[in-house]
Amino acid sequence: MKRIKFVGLDVHAETIAVAVAEQDGEARSVGVIPNRDECVRKLVKKLGPAEELHFCYEAGPTGYVLYWQLTALGAKCEVVAPTLVPVRVGDRVKTDRRDALQLARSYRAGELTAVGVPDAAHEALRDLVRAREAAKRDQLRARNRLTKFLLRQGKRPPAGVNPWTLNYMDWVRKEVHFELLAQQATLLDYLHEVEHMAARVTRLEQAIEEAVALAPQQMREVIAALQALRGIAKVSAVTIVAELGELSRFAQARQLMAYSGTVAREHSSGESRKRGGITKTGNVHLRRIVVEAAWAYRHAPAVTAGLRKRQERVSEEVKEIAWKAQHRLHGRYRKLTARGKNTGKVITAVGRELLGFIWAIGVKVEAEQRKALGQAA
Image (cartoon, rainbow, N blue to C red; front, top):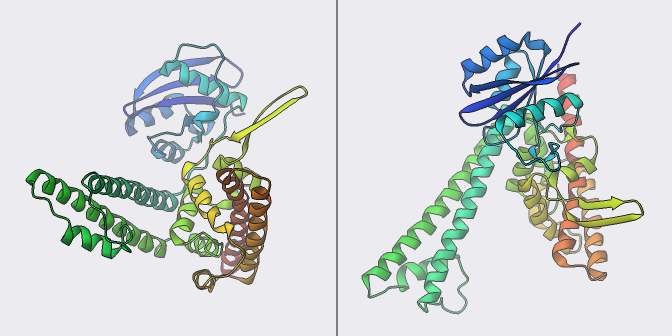
């Protein structure tokens, strides 16, 4: 009979604090080991056999390297959501040793919430998508620096020239000059940074195109199907798939909504029931994408030329779900705005419901792909 040992790991870049909770005994600290492959192997051998070890550690900047190593050694490992780890009220002492003990005890009690660990393809695509997202933020900062500098110097583009168009950039390069060397050097530096950021974004978007072309068939099909939804073009669809992995891992659409952090806070006690804003306890990258996409549903249902092109290679069932989404979400937007709700809150509510349609399309396509793969085998 197996006697399971629940092992809590407080993982840092250089060290790992280890604690063990026996199945029917007390939790004890094992000590601190270096965060190195050979030390982890020695730990598993010391605590083993591996099949009786259940490890857990909090998701964080060290990623999933430790997860892959422990599972390769034959042990079970789960990466848990750090924001959902139980915390004792009034506990004012926090150390690595105590954190590891708390993880071990909570894991044994079944009080921890595991996060989905992506496979290698999803993790690589997610890293690339997040690099592009970081580049877009840097591009915005670079543009803001240039425009604010020009504004301080009283330099305004000619009438009819919109910011960041080709004409605007030509105006900055050819028409904006300063007599003072310091100001001219500042202009050239800001301009160079704007051009550099634009090239960086273009390069990463091209890399995303190439990565999607080489991705597994199921991933490509889900990305193509999600683009049938209004407001979700290729980069948005890739971001959703990269952040979520398989959508069918969520048993219900409501679970996906909770994962995104777009569900309402609640504080209820006795007869009192209070709801607040969204929890924001979830994947911030996913939440940003769906809220941005939700703005498209302000407009009346329609299939534009761009949307029609994106829907060319998807099934009629997916098109039907996307068309139903347009009617449902536009109606939701109109209903909430007619009640005088804040526009930002309305868009967030629409984005939450959009996740339900994303889930429906993703689950359907993944089921079709699994069925096709089974028939081919």
